[in-house]
Length: 371
Image 1 (cartoon, rainbow, N blue to C red):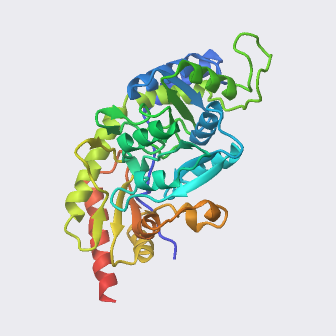
Image 2: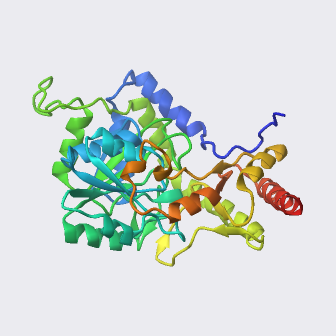
Image 3: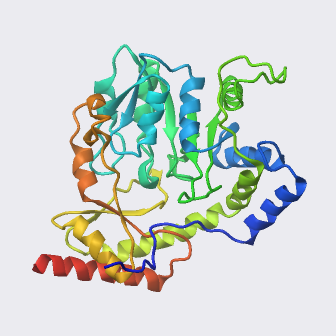
C-alpha cells in the first residue's frame, strides 16, 4: 500500500527574495557563469564563514575534486576519509587518481576518529578529508595537529554543516580548503552548486583556473593546464545570495526543531542522540537519532503510515564492494550506520507537526516491542 507523505525528510526554504534576485539576473541577460551575483555570493559566503576567498563551483562534489587537484594530489597519493559519509567524499579521491584510505568514526559523534587517522598515515599520505557529519564539527584541533606534524593538507567537507563552529571558528575556515554543497536539501541552496573557501591566495587562483577549463586569467582562451567546467551560473548565485541573507533565521528555526525533537524523544527507551560538546556549536541539518534494540527499517516503513518520511544513515563505504579494499579497521561506523535514522527537518515544520512525528515514533516503537 502506498501512503501519502505529508512530512518529507527535507525541503528548501524559499521566499519571494529568491524570485526577485533570480529575475534581476534574468533581466540582466547574464544568466550563465558570469555576472554580479557570482562575485557577490563568493564574497558574502566567504565572509560569513570567516575565510578570505570563495570560489563558486557547480556542486559540492566538484568543489572537493577541484580542491584535491589544486593541492596537487594525484596518482599514488593517499587521502584519508571517514567510513561514514556520502560517496562523493571518496569518489573525488578516485577521480583525482589518488588512493582513498577509509578509516573509522567515533561512536559518540559519528565523525572521523583522529586516532584512526594517525594509525592510517603512511609515507604516501598527502591529505585528510574530515566530514562534518549531520551538522557536527569534527575534532579539528586534533586533526590539524596531526596534519601539521605529518605535513598533510586538510580539506574540510562541510556539505552538511553550514554555520557550524569549532571553538569559535566556523567549519570551512580551519583547514587548507573548506568545501560546501548547496544542493536542494542543504541549509542554504542554489539548487545545485558548491563552493571552495581558502585563506591562501595562490590556492584561490589555482581553483579559479581549474574551474574555468584551465584558462589563463591574463590571456583569454590560452590554457595553462587541463581544467574543468565546474562553474556556477549567475542565476544559481542569485538564489544563493538571497538564501544567505536568511541563513541565521534558517539555522535558528532548525535549532528550535532539534530542541523540540529532543524534548519529546529524550525519555524514549532505545532512542539516543549525537553527542554534544561545550566547545562545538553544531547545526541541525537533519535531526538524527540512533536506535538500540529497535528495528529501524520497520520503523521507517511504519512511519509512512502516518505520512512521515525518514531516511537511514549512509551505508558505510567499507560495506560497498567498490570501496571495501580501501578500508582500514572499521567497527564504529558499521554499528552507527545500522542504527541511525534521520527525521524530517526543514523550516516550516510547526510544533504540532513535530509532536505528531514524535508521537508516531513512540507509538510504533511500543507496537514493535509488543510483537
